[in-house]
Every structure is written in structure tokens, then in C-alpha cells.
Image (tube, rainbow, N blue to C red; front, side, top):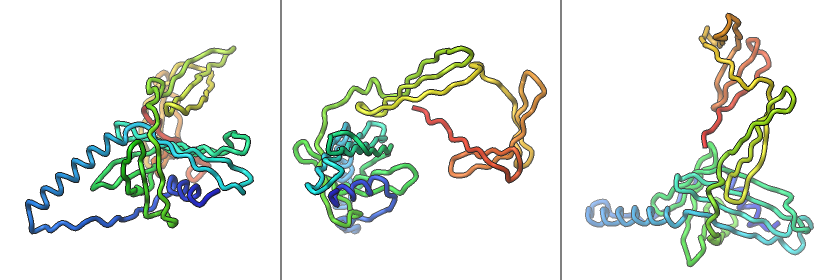
Length: 251
């Protein structure tokens, strides 16, 4: 693959913070400082509006690449400052054989586009709009590549979300989900269980032990607990094998 493909992929998953030099404003000139600040804020707000939607970049592999023909990159920028990045690498038969999916948050500040993936530090992008393209460059790219994304047609956002239905097969219940992540990308999944009714309990704590008592009986379940990196870890014994639980994100 081309170095540009490799570097753009690295930029998508990296978490390093970079700096960008800006023009220096004379702080002793109040009018100059205020006018310049207001102009930058207006430019940032305008850029946020222009970013909305999806932007596509197709990187063609080198002729001597034995595995890939091209890789498609799509940035989605939504009004709530959240977004998504999809990367699909196609083989010589034009079938997708490698994918990357990353949710993100983004904002523009002082005419710099910041894109943040998960808990990583935001990546700084210099950007400019030209006709129907978004031209981006990052100081993190050691090859100093410039990426030209083309504005795509707006997709149908009505489908975006997690849609589910429940069916029964014998004594088992199944929640079947179709999750539309972007106007073009989605996945399916399901979960099975024996009893569709939630089992309510009261819970208390005793040191580092969680005690859950069923409301319809005196039966209690005791688990040792700890929190780390936003996850809840439970174990039957102190220092025993742990099971971790993640919070369910709201759509």
C-alpha cells in the first residue's frame, strides 16, 4: 500500500497530541485582538456548518501491490459534534477484505479541526474547503501528505440507530437487532435468554463487596467489585476470576 494509506490509517487510531503555530496577535492592541478573535470565532462556526455530512477519499494502491486495489475512507460529521470514520480496503477482486470502524467527536477551534477517537488525545488537522472538497493535513503525518476528501450526497439518517425485535423459539427468547451506524454501514446481532421478565433486587455494600437481594425472596448474591477504565469488574471471591461489564451507551 502507499505510504499515504498507511499514514491515514495510523492517524485514524492514534492518540498523540500535536501543536500548530498560529499568527501572533499584539495583545496591547485591544481593537486588533477583539476583531481578530471575533473573525476566528465566525470562521470556526462557519466551518462546523460546512463540515456537516459525509466526506469520501479513495486511495488507489500501488500497481505492484499484490493484495489491495484501493481503500475507501469516509468521514461522517453530525450536528451533535459526534461522527464516524469507516475504512474499507478492497482486494484485487474488488471485495472488502479489511475494515476499520471508529466513532469520534470533533470540533473546530482557532481554525484547527480536532478529531478525537475514544479516550485518545485529539488529533489536530489543518483544513480548507475548496469547491466540493475538504483538504486536510496533519503535522503528525511524517510524510506531510495532504488528503483531499470529496463531499458525498447526504444519506438517509432515518435508519441510523439500534432497531430490535423479540421472537420466541421453544422456551428461549431472542432479541434480534439491526444497527444502522451510518447512512451506509450497519451490522446485526442477537441475544438469547430464558426469562423475558427482569429480576428486580435491592443492593447494598459491605466494603468492597456488592450484595444483591431479590425483592421476591430473601436470596442474596454477593460479588466482590471494582471499577477500572469505566468498566465494572465482579468476582465471586476476593482476588478471584473477574467478569467485566461495560455500560450500555444511549443512542
